Length: 165
Ligand SMILES: CC(C)(COP(=O)(O)OP(=O)(O)OC[C@H]1O[C@@H](n2cnc3c(N)ncnc32)[C@H](O)[C@@H]1OP(=O)(O)O)[C@@H](O)C(=O)NCCC(=O)NCCS
Image 1: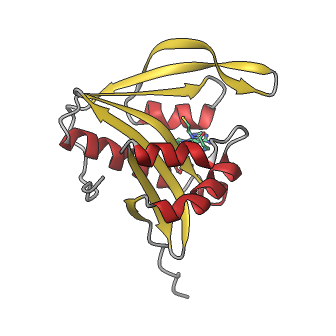
Image 2: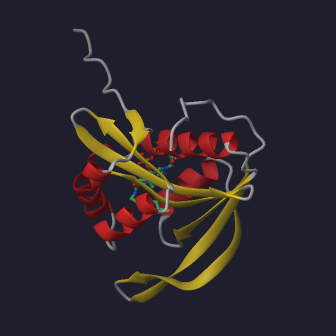
């Protein structure tokens, strides 16, 4: 029997009319999600805001700033139904390729110290621990530390069509 073709994961810049769908993914994926207003602010200040679609649905988003040779990844999120299928890695590489095109040489991000899945992804993609921000995130028990990660962007990334925002 022939297998159905794998679903196509298409990355494109986020639009204002995506916000409700993006917020739904955010709520499904995080115990402490950003509000819709935070995503709106990210669009307003022209951060690199991307979504990943498996038609007809938005299943992923990524938010990053790029300035003065550095990029900072603020959000990388895959809907729980689509996790562990390589989409997080694709979105991350896409953002880093875009940052490299914009002359960033270093990427930074914060991750919950307890977020083992995300930490495994970032370690596999070459990020190293450079510090800790104490009590950075809200958590069920009060506050939780963030681990600060960084990586150089001098290594060539496969260009996943990183253009646009
Ligand atoms: C973290 C997150 C973005 C990873 O995306 P994903 O699509 O599930 O991950 P991928 O399938 O691309 O994983 C790539 C590699 O990362 C590692 N990895 C990802 N999730 C993992 C998990 N839960 N446990 C262990 N390793 C994991 C593995 O090495 C994996 O490769 P493999 O599947 O071949 O073993 C996704 O789980 C998510 O959106 N989580 C909720 C939001 C979040 O925590 N975002 C990160 C904020 S900093």
